[in-house]
Length: 126
View 1 (tube, helix red, strand yellow):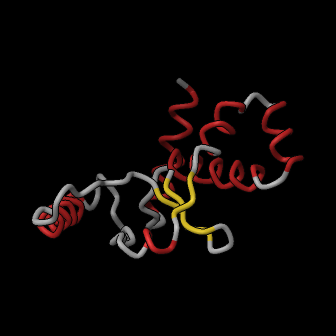
View 2: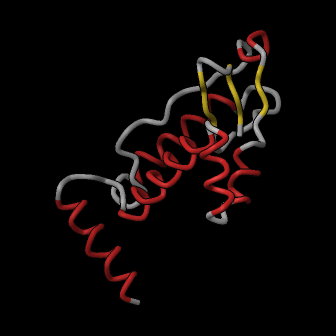
């Protein structure tokens, strides 16, 4: 219960500063960034394994490279900033409607929840 109170207070402070992400979202993003950084080296992967994050290691290594000729066929757009679920509900709904209208005439559109692009390693879908 005390942990929830801490998150609530931290989130209220962030929102007062004009930051539109909750404390939990910042915490999750920071954890993910650190985990991805540690995954880049054998020492980092060993450390994550010793700390009990074996599942994250397996999950993060489930990526496949996409060849350039296939990548050219994809249409990808960045997610706009300021799309907080609580504050920008109208913007989120308009964005979803736009995406559906744009992609509905095409055959079999596929929506991907998470994608990364690393110029050194090629393009990947998670």
